[in-house]
Amino acid sequence: MKPAIAFLIFAGIVISATANLHAQGCDYIPGDINGNGTVNGIDVTFAVAYFKGLQVPPIDCNPPCTGVPDPFYAAGDVNGDCRFNGIDIVWWIHHGPPFRWCPACPPARGVNE
Image 1 (cartoon, rainbow, N blue to C red):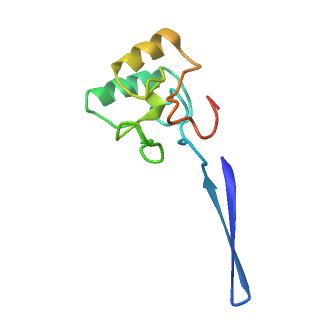
Image 2: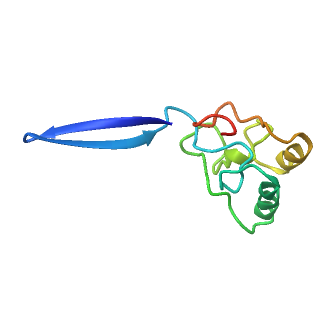
């Protein structure tokens, strides 16, 4: 993440604001499907529950990413084909971290931080 700083001068008063902006990508960790900041087997269980309609991953990356399905849960797309489906669960279990990611939606803060 790159912090952006904005300054506004109005009537002699300087007002500043800081925001975390991402030039590209989405703020997620590949494989961290439940969004708790840790990549582990609980993410596989979370994904299975999602596919059964019981819960939804917390980070939808459409927007900011375009050219991907809407909604797009990029953290679950661990094989990098720009889709989150059952194939990703098999990939997660078979290959484990580090994971691939969708080229149209890279992780904004790096890989598996």
